[in-house]
Amino acid sequence: MPMIDELLRACSVRIVTAGSSGTGAFVAPGLVLTCAHVIASAHKTAGPLRVFWSGRELDDGIEIVDYHAGPFPDLALLRVPLGGRAVPVSAVFAAMASIAEEQRLHHAADSRWHACLDPVQRARLQRRSDAAANPFLGESEEVIGRDEALHRVFDKLRAGNHCSVVGPRGSGKSALLRLLRPRLGEQLDWTASEVAWLNFRTIETLRELQEALVHRLGGQRAGDWRSLMRVKPLRLVVLDDLGGMDAGAKGLEMRRWLRGLHDQFQTRLLPLSNERLEVLFRKDDPLRDSPLAGIDPIPVVLGPLPAADCRRLVEARLAGSKLPFADYAGLCREPQQPAALLARCAARFEEQRRIGQRSAPA
Image (cartoon, rainbow, N blue to C red; front, top):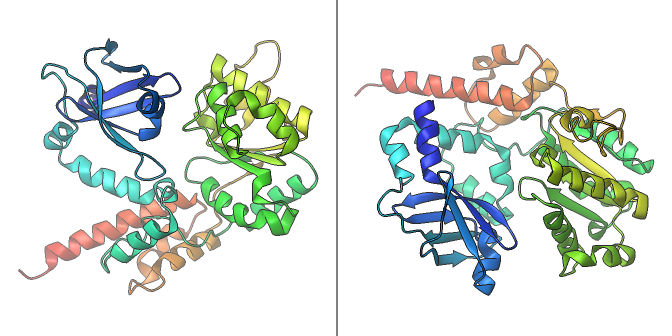
């Protein structure tokens, strides 16, 4: 593992512009692939574009050589002269060929990657899946075993309260959001324009947070958020992947601002995190609790699925295939989180496939 870490560090760069920051990776000597939104301001205004690699800033002749704006494919290519010292990503796969397959399996099993696709792309992905594809990889069409959690979320919001959803990675928080989004109207009589969905994998500062909210409200400048909220008040702000928020001073500034939305506009918050909020940000202020601590004293906790729901989940994945449930029944006898169960089933499928390939006649 130290060798992998060293290779990946050599392949990665940090990119900073006037309005954003992010990461990139060398895909060939001197060529860095990054997301278009990371360098959008530099591309639009020819503003400053700073690249940091191996602990130092590279400031010699950086240029944007290709740019494809979001939402898809949201990619850009930078030329960063390094005198041949860059290590392309291909070097990692050349050194350790197994990583490519491990990466493919990991991404296919992580529903967050599929959530980035629009319906047309997702349908195309399904059509390309062959009959021998692992049925336990990818996003589940049906969310099983979370009906009670969904009812509790609606009950809390209906009562005018904040609601916190807590569960470890792989417990189905993103899947719960998929259930929640289309039902807000029928359950709470809210329109789509009254709800903002924010993901803290891409928001790093208070300004970026305000810009995201202003963009959701149809505005242009971060400073307009207060006037826009008066005209188009939000009933709910969903805070997805809250654990990705900065745990230091920048994050504390954002958490105070978010808590203030309820005080000023009665906006409810729906944070999703791996840990309870009072634990997640317990170092915010040594003299008092974190701004988000206590907004929901009894959070909705996504615990392991009971054995009966584990069986239902596996049976749903096997539906339409010729695989017998008996081959996977032993994996469903104890409560477990859905992602962990599917990963175990996926591993067993691959093991049986390898055994079948070895025993097949030449």
